Image (cartoon, rainbow over all chains, first blue to last red):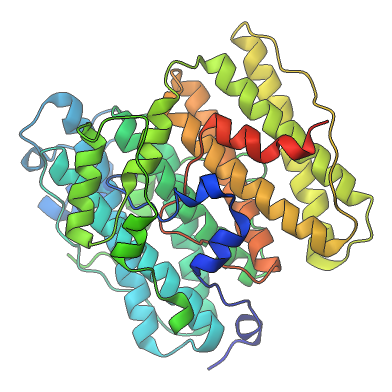
Length: 235
Length: 209
């Protein structure tokens, strides 16, 4: 089924030509950076869904890193970052898995489908980068959670995507100040704004405000985020 | 669809230039490890760019951000005087108001840190209609994202970092919306680029009188 509004949406294209057109030469050098770790919201998830069935309340928010001792045999400094990276990784796994299922559902076609594909590819790249970062920090990347999503109609899926992306953006924002490593922070920020771009796009397609929080985006802590995504995690 | 295919790893790497930090630095190893795993990478550039700016104090970074926000706010104000319609018109009003809020917040933060807010720059924008407005808006917003992302890792205060983060997310949302209005990809890269302060200043220089 088609959703007129979506079919009319512009087709996002990731063309290098477009990039070059708007970038001066000095910026060209920085095209296509892929990162190593970022992270903000998923580590907890990982801790939550990876190890055992903890209730979301068990991961008391923020300050204390999740008790995922299996994640690190490294210093406490990287231990905190590893947990955050794994939390982000779990969220990205969920997002990537979500888009995969949406694409396979056949609910979308044309331009809206190509937009979804691009977003799914972005999330898959975030997954790979975060896995690499977790390893680089001496940690063990969180396992991919099993997830299920309600895919009833194009409009409901779009709303869920918007919710997930807005949540992802606020989740990264919620972790930024907790990341110890500047390098990990830089990577997290570069992912954070892409989640924001995805979120804005979906909000726009739904006819909603692209800045639901107003002029200043609101952060979300781990426990809030984990509670929000819990319904989608099977195991 | 061919138009959403990503560049090959070779193309990506060809576009990467590393400077500012040594290749032996930690993040780079992480980036390279990630790229090895994924096949396409260069987290290195944004990190090296960010690190190259270390040494800037928080007030200096905030004043840099303030100058950009002054420009954006003035830009949208000018746009509001043009004959715009539909979503573009709404964006000029709404985004302009949000940039002005960023200006006020940054000024307040700078004062709180004991600093002196940068002066409002004289500006000039070559826009005369909807298309030229949107095109330049896209440049400003994407540049804003890259500027904040490039400078943020150097921020020392957690509070200032939190503020910068909440602002850059809005810049990214603006950028995506403007891009959609221009029929461009809202998220051109899986990882947003960063720019150094010098690069940003060079990019906006044409609009400062």
